[in-house]
Length: 459
Image 1 (tube, rainbow, N blue to C red):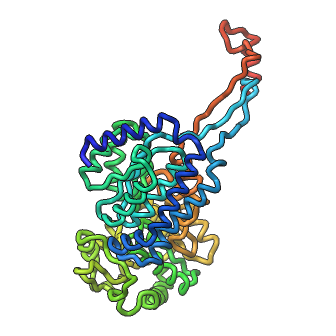
Image 2 (tube, rainbow, N blue to C red):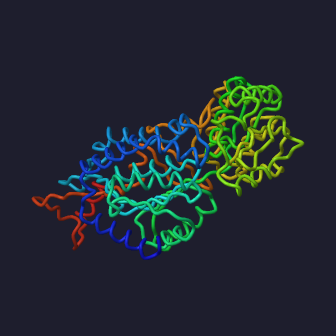
Image 3 (cartoon, rainbow, N blue to C red):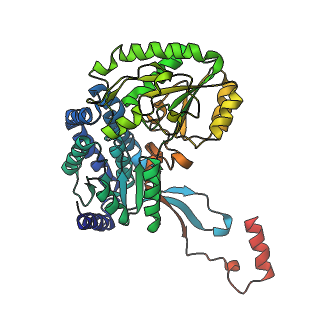
């Protein structure tokens, strides 16, 4: 699309929003049911697109993308009427006789920009929240996952008129045109570099934003941890989607006294879950493109590889790779990995681990494996991070009952479930003042007697 076409879409969506058509909760419910039916209808096509873009198996596609979107829709359909209701709050005595209430209201026309690593989930999940809250929306999926972008566009065209929901495909030129438009809210998922540009452009119109970014998410393994279970769950979380997950454990930070045993268990788990020849497995994914393949392979230091390390440039595949004796000064620790490399670092005391994590940028996720509840409390209380798990990885984002998001360098704002509804809503604070009584004390001329009454009411 060119600049004028994008401008026309935004204009038509704003006009449609001003008709009030999206304010009716029944209309929102109907829209969500249409979307759900279309997703179910096109499930095989979604699986095929994700296989082409990222090499995902149908099982992983449903578990990590399609199924989670359907779960979000089901949750919203169950709770949307409650979320959309006005909430009466207490009125101070000084405002007698009045009703005070909070009224959730949609922002208007919102822009949702999604990444390539979970291109179906991270496009439609926030859309579900935006629809439930009563907005119109423009979706901009990543150019790096074109097959999934195409099926998303097909689903949206099948369900909605573009004056309500529309998909804009393309690359940087389209991104630039969209960010030059005046949206009422921008929801962006992606890298910190692009996130800064989104926030900069949004500031021109004073548009509020949610940024879902990333960072180097640590996985702490404390000496009391169940090492076999820790290895099993860490390998799952780290190598899911070939490590191309924003909340994947970026590195393992292990107590030195148990490191060798942990590495041994990790190597066993890699072989158990991916086999001796993972590059030959049909259900093992691939790196999104050549650029990222070269970046990731450039982070591998052969002398520190204790498992894996092989790659297939033609298929854009890299083996699950474990690197031991890594330090914070190594190249692999200078950026978010976003690939199937697992560096293992050590600490001598939990205080040292906490101190080092505190000194770095706030990660999107943090994981700790420990059977020492005091150690868990210390880490989760003293370290700054978006969200995480105790004795597991990844799964904290798979619930509609908790918001998901980062803070600081890993983002701002959250979504999923009620938090998602709130993200795409502005809560108006309203006082409905009755007309049959009008206390005179607030009006000029001010008198001492009135001052005493004001002090009595406002103490």
